[in-house]
Amino acid sequence: MTFVLGLTGSIGMGKSATADLFRRLGVPVHDADATVHKLYHGRAAPLIEKAFPGTVAGGAVDRAKLGAMVLGNQERMKQLEAIVHPLVREEEESFLQRVSALSSIAVLDIPLLFETAGETRCDAVLAVTAPASVQRDRVMARPGMTDEKFRAILAKQMPDADKRARAHFLVDTSRGFASAEAQVRSILACLAGRPGWRHRF
Image (cartoon, rainbow, N blue to C red):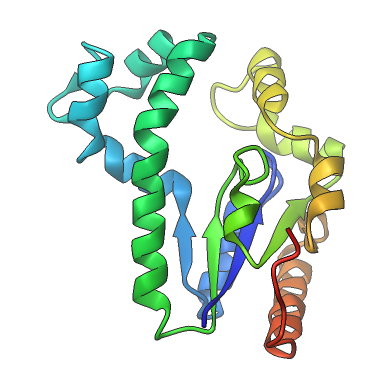
């Protein structure tokens, strides 16, 4: 039975780079953000257009138009999540079924894992972390990022300290690529040596 490791981390913590490390080491990874992108260009588009007219063009969701319609509106955001989240879960389940015979470990890369109770679908959780100063420098270097946007994003995410307290494993990405890879290898070795691991949640 495939061991499901949830991967999460706040913006700028290095989660995507850590997910790539798992892929390089042969571990299949399901990327929730990439799945949403695919759905916005596929089967979610007509459902979103029906709920939010004018947000789809050329068969794909216009994220800017959708964002203008739902951001800051809790009711509309919940309406959008009610459309998208079940579709993401279906894709996730399909992924796990495909890899079950191929790998003893699979990673679910979910940015808002704890915020959406995603830990209940995992056997263990890895939180990617870095000092707040490093996080801020990384995020503010992104094109179009402002202090206001950064604060708004952080407000939607569980504090890093809480994620670290709830996770089974941590990867500190502030010490360079080689260190992060060594930490990932150590986690995989730990999981490989503990076949009796069970849900903590």
